[in-house]
Figure 1 (cartoon, one colour):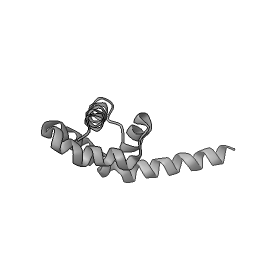
Figure 2 (tube, one colour):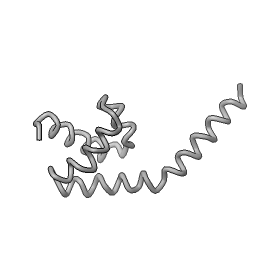
Figure 3 (tube, one colour):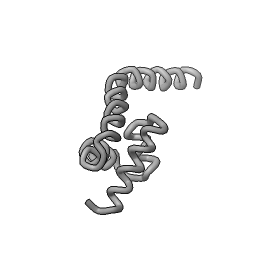
Figure 4 (cartoon, helix red, strand yellow):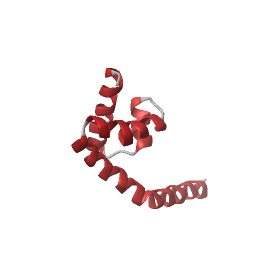
Length: 85
């Protein structure tokens, strides 16, 4: 694996552990695509550091479990904003 990719994967994983951000937020922060972050954290990280991968996977599972709540909350805020205008 390219050393640049190796370094990015570890940076993304550590950033996720520190901030608990979503894949979308991490991709925006590191200026790479969501697909890249997803592949980095789901595939490449497992080959690099299994312990770190387990910690990141726990956060990713949590995000998956609550995504229906986040989506509903976003929609509610969108329509509240439209009602005030």
